[in-house]
Length: 105
Image 1 (tube, rainbow, N blue to C red):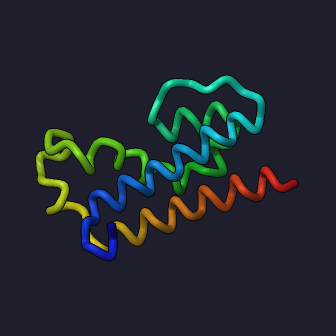
Image 2 (image 1 turned 120 degrees about the vertical axis):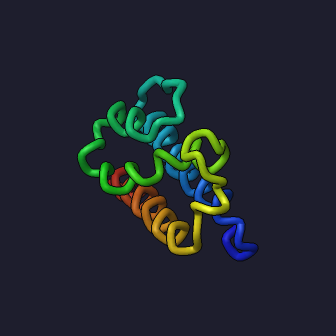
Image 3 (image 1 turned 90 degrees about the horizontal axis):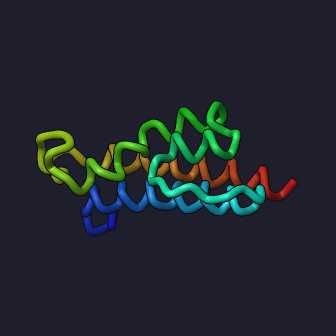
């Protein structure tokens, strides 16, 4: 998506990667899944909110802001740039790497 310069969609996929990783981590921990897209709520449920907060805070807004104009009152394509995508990609990567390190211990 990013190569094609579809930055809102690429950022949404970063949020989705972090969400799915957190939900997988909950299963790994033996916890019951909760029905939410909030990375904050999921990280609280895993007990890893403090460690993940710097990375999930930017990603959390991308679940809705990348797809719905009424969230920011701007078209997502006007708000989401390559620079924003690169930041979101780094955030998602950090979340996935943290979860991988917790599951490989």
